[in-house]
Length: 333
Ligand code: NDP
Image (tube, rainbow, N blue to C red):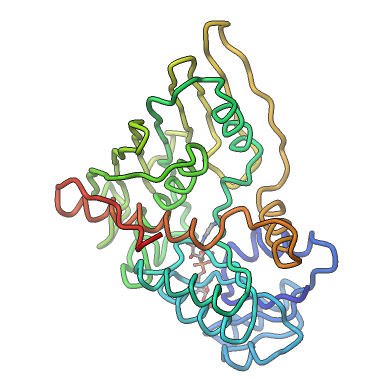
């Protein structure tokens, strides 16, 4: 399977190039950058044969089967539509697009052109989250009453830029992190938030976009979800908790790109440490994507998952701006 990278990004160089190359028979043929020099340096540094500044020229390579889109968020929509029209399978970064209707258009275009389309929500690939989901789905904590997501991190200097100062590129903690938490809650509970309330603001980093948000979501089952996402918390650590009628799950340091963390189950038997697999999250995501392209199985997060996580994030932002309860609009999905 031959790949083209759309975007000379840090997530590509830091995680996804390695994950693509970990798949049997996978090769990366080219990278697209808006800046010829950055593209050439990125290609050289990552041993990629070609770099392009023109997407049409890159996509004209008929030997390329799939693209990975990891540009800033406002570019995902047009780049995905072009790749789909060229018959390429698409792994797209989150958030899929700036608007829900754009995300829906991308997913429908992929369907109509019979190409595989997936969203790169990495957390559901973590051994920790797979173990938590198994605990919940096997009934170990009974009926889930509530969950809390602790995802307040300290954004390192090199990742700031557009994330903290450019709303037009999709900056802000809600499109950056709340989408992941929406996907993770949906993954664990197999249901979609109905409505949300939220407060957002800046706490030292955001320049024109929010850098912190807290929200509460209602689930169809009656479970209540509390979330906290931030770019400014140097010492908070991350985690997720699920509280049920028969037990509670406490997971720490699991809202991360690395296969780390710890999980405790507390119930009438006392406290149990839960072990989990420590495979690379992105290797698993790419493995499932390549399997889906070959016709065996599904991507770990597909296009509809990407639409739904974006829908929740938009509802959270609207709720924070309006001060009202906002019903989540899933665009018909
Ligand atoms: P980067 O800022 O590294 O890259 C985004 C774009 O910025 C690139 O496409 C590139 O443009 C440009 N760029 C990169 N490096 C520089 C530089 N040194 N100077 C100027 N411009 C530069 O973003 P991320 O990799 O952090 O994020 C990219 C996408 O991936 C986003 O959609 C984000 O939400 C998502 N993401 C997902 C993660 C996940 O785990 N699923 C984790 C991190 C990000 P060009 O291509 O034109 O050269």
